[in-house]
Amino acid sequence: MLTRIDHIGIACFDLDVTVEFYRRTYGFTDEHFEVNEEQGVRECMLKINETGDGAASYLQLIEPIREDSAVAKWLAKNGEGVHHIAFGTDRDVAEESAFIEDEGIRVLYETPRNGSMGSRINFLHPKDCHGVLTELVQKPAPSTT
Ligand code: CMX
Ligand code: CO
Image 1 (cartoon, helix red, strand yellow):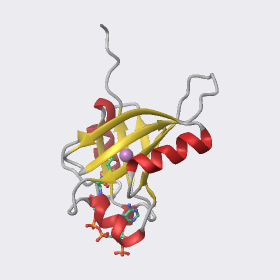
Image 2 (cartoon, helix red, strand yellow):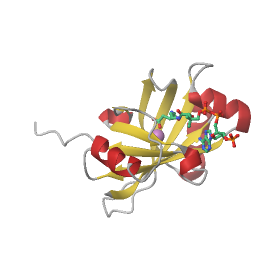
Image 3 (cartoon, protein in one colour):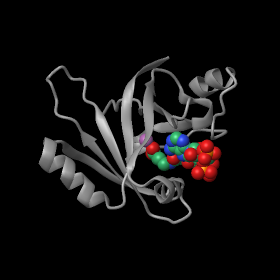
C-alpha cells in the first residue's frame, strides 16, 4: 500500500545554488547529499521544517552529472521544475511494483534499484500516470544497532 509522500523531486541546473535558495528563503535543512551514479544525479534531500509530529517531509533536489542521464534530457526539454513525485510503500517495493504492473501500468525497472539514503526504488511511466513520473520508495529497515 502507498502510505505517504516520500519526497517531491525537483530538477535543477545548479544543486548548490538551489539548495541555498530553499535554506535562505524557507529555512529548510539540507539533511543529506549523495551522488547516485546509476541515476546520473547529484542530489540533496531537503527536510521541510518540522512541526513536531515526527512526520518529516522532503524535497529531493537533483542535478544531472551526465549529459545522457534522464534528468539532463528532461532539463534540456523543460528547464528547471518539478520532475517527479515519490510515494512511500509499506511493503517490499518489488511486490508493490508487481501489483501496480498488473493494472497495466509500465514499471520502468525489472528489479528495484538504489535510491537515496539506502532506499530501494522503482518508477512508473509518466504516460501511464496522467503525466506524472511516479517513484515508489521502500525505506531501509531501521537499524537495530
Ligand atoms: N514527468 C512527466 N512526463 C515526462 C517526464 C517527467 N519527469 N519525463 C518524460 N516525460 C514525458 C515526455 O514529456 C514525453 O512525452 P511526449 O512524448 O508527449 O513528448 C515522454 O514522457 C517521453 O519522454 P522523453 O523525453 O522521450 O524521455 P524518455 O522516454 O527517454 O525517458 C523516462 C522518460 C520517464 C523513461 C525517464 O525519464 C526515466 O527513466 N526516468 C526514471 C529515472 C529518473 O528519472 N531518475 C532521476 C531521479 C532519481 C531519483 O529520484 O532518485
Ligand atoms: Co526521487
